[in-house]
Image 1: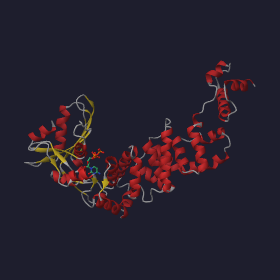
Image 2: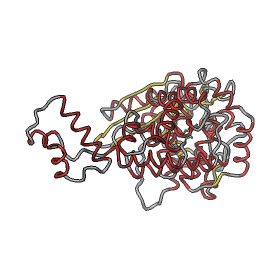
Image 3: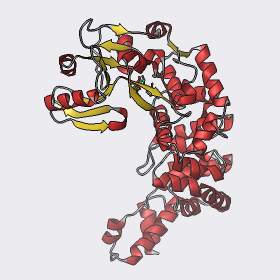
Length: 424
Ligand code: CTP
């Protein structure tokens, strides 16, 4: 429908970006289901007006009902989202008008002016993402490959389009790593050199320091980190980022030291063992571990720059105080019940952050609490007490707390011992 509407108006329409890459990588026997489609409109006989993408989006919205339409006027793009459409399923379609972006200063938002499809592709991140598939005549189905993307797909290489790419947009470093690990590709030598150069140049120290000026950049960086940390391959991606020294984009002091790597793996083990209600999402906890690895004075600043949820920002802000209290109390806890009393006031997420930074003996105690003691229940519950003739009221809690304490400390092992204690 969009192609037809574009053709009627004398425009060209292309599928671009990841969709073309994934189509070319897919097994030819398989039907691939694109859920995120990027389209670009380009003028052929006459220039596409700046609002061409928006106009086509409106045509699609009318044709396939139920779409939510967002228009990003400044960038002349439209986004359409269908949720469980009978024909389309759940589908996200971005339609842009072919454009050139130029960056007035490093790491700033791109500004836009109408231009041709080649220019549009040239502003993209990697050769394998800078391919376009023609959807309008003549030569429907032709792949436009101006920068050697098909050769790089075959050679399994992540190659950047121009030397300044990473200086303009640090999130591309994270994207390079994400695609390389996900697709099993290598970073092409010169591209790796550009990444290292961009990081060593310190340009991101500036963009992070001025995170008030570039909140959009921080959000995009956080989103890339989220993609990586949510993916099954996150460990390999973090190692590659560490190897490139790219954690510096989070904060100029952040490095993937053996200690930080150990902490991340510990959290991973912890998350595999248990996932109690109320624990923050795993990707966020991993990111918090990285932020918590920074000196206390930077944590709040980085977490709020990333616009993490308020609870997470608070946790990182107060982490040092919580850690000091916990690490001074724990050595004095000799019984399980005293450990429970000491650790109960803290959320699991806080305890995990403290645990990974604690010495071995205390780490084991927190692990025992998280894994076992926090889940313990008294041998008798409120109903049992009623049956034993106790009247509900304030004393219930006192009795249940005492029963829990004795259960934790192994003084009560079964119902009979609990009932015998109550009779005494
Ligand atoms: N793009 C870019 N620079 C960025 C982000 C995106 O050049 N910092 C371009 C790339 O051409 C990319 C396209 O925008 O292919 C769409 O971006 P996105 O949807 O984030 O990535 P996909 O390539 O579609 O990958 P994925 O499969 O992970 O969605």
